[in-house]
Image 1 (tube, rainbow, N blue to C red):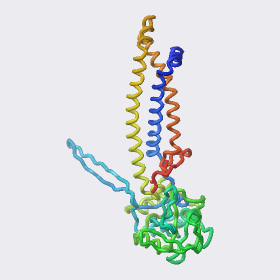
Image 2 (image 1 turned 120 degrees about the vertical axis):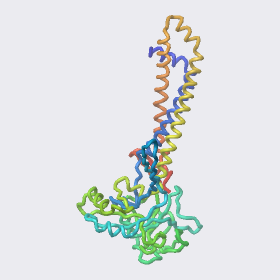
Image 3 (image 1 turned 180 degrees about the vertical axis):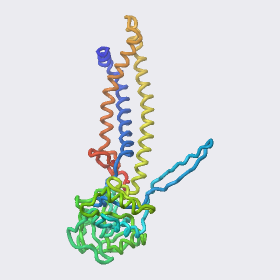
Image 4 (image 1 turned 60 degrees about the horizontal axis):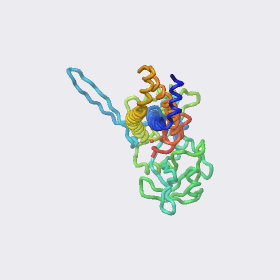
Length: 376
């Protein structure tokens, strides 16, 4: 029967071309949406600024809501949590609590705020890929780590250090003057040094480093820190230290993050991007699957209608209805197998071009820069 089905497909190439095309497009679209959905569910948000800090302490980035509903004498309690795109800050007293925990070699407070070097033409330092630029305290450079390649660290509030990639793009060097636009009024600073990250440069952002006093002023949250990077003591176990920190911070709004959980701390808006990715992939994928089923069924129905005389001839030479159904089923299997395999492969190729830059679900996933300003 399979031999007859293959001969039929070869003899009626034009009739099966429409079914093949419909199945190919449906498989590609559904697979691409499935990739997006899987990325949102299992994708990890890679960290950059906290690469050298195996443990990061930060505030809870979710808004929690508890609803109590009574139905037929039964009480149901539902807890909902929605992520916030804006960073939640911790009181700076948390730093001392963390430092007193056994096994902590250093607790480095981190403040992050938008800060752009304004060019002479009036534009900011965003590059052609639209990467944002952030300001930090120079003391937090050890969390990446950033090391000086030229010049020295900032010593007064009118000095700063910029990363090497930004310096090359803006044509700056130690001794240059640059106007920085941040949360406060624009101010001109003198570049005292050029710093480079351990792995070259940060792919998702540019960095400007100020003194502790100036960074606190520009952050606009006096007495608070955005996060705390933990550098363990030599020989300390990261898992045990994280458990000790969680016990020390019990009852506070601070949370301990390790491994892939550090990414959402650095990019708080990535959590909302993940939810949008799951919603978009599920909604579009489900709709595409439904439409594809209708289109494919209609296409095969039309193909069968065009073969009424052929089917009648098979019935006239004693072919049973079961054999006719088997023949049509095998024809559909041949076309579906070829179209589904090629379409699914084409949909999987979209992983290298349509995945959010901060979400990664595997080593083969290449970012294309969607969220992060929250991928795969």
